[in-house]
Image (cartoon, rainbow, N blue to C red; front, side, top):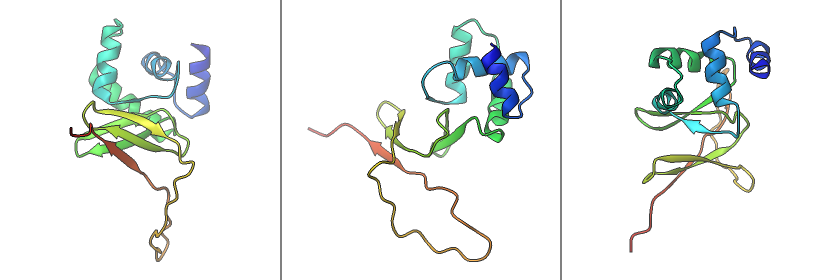
Length: 134
């Protein structure tokens, strides 16, 4: 759990037992996408007792620290993403599965000129897929 503690501390997040538990579950393997409810179910299935409110609070702390990003697929459907590098997404509407789509080869043109003190922070692209109709 030392690596998780160091990761949280380096990001400015106080490493409590529950934050370390959630972080060790999230950052142990490959990058992933999940909802707070999916994470809650995974933790409960693994006999890790954490309330949904604690998960939301912890995810909020991780977001503020830059350890996670969010991807809004539809109103009321927010995914969390452990991959914080610039990239886009594929969303399987039938299976409700979000996967990474590398930005290589994707060109974004025609972005608006902003006035005043505003600048474009990033461009989010979600390519939605569904089964072909026969």
